[in-house]
Image (cartoon, rainbow, N blue to C red; front, side):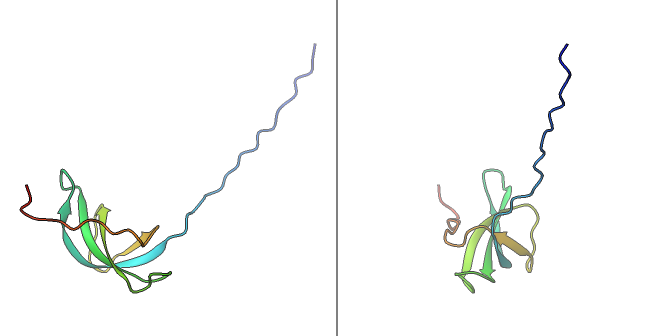
Length: 86
């Protein structure tokens, strides 16, 4: 009979964070999405290469003016809402 050898399994527990840039919500524009699940806001970037740049972003979940969003990128902006378009 072979003796049983316990294999030690290494559990790699670590959280991988991607770098994000803080931005504050300046204005709530309107709800967007097929069912109104997202809110379009204008936010001002506080740090990074595009500091003080005002962006239009779509946010899912509750949001108020003055909230801080953590943006992964600050180059791409959401499309503007065209009301009355069919």
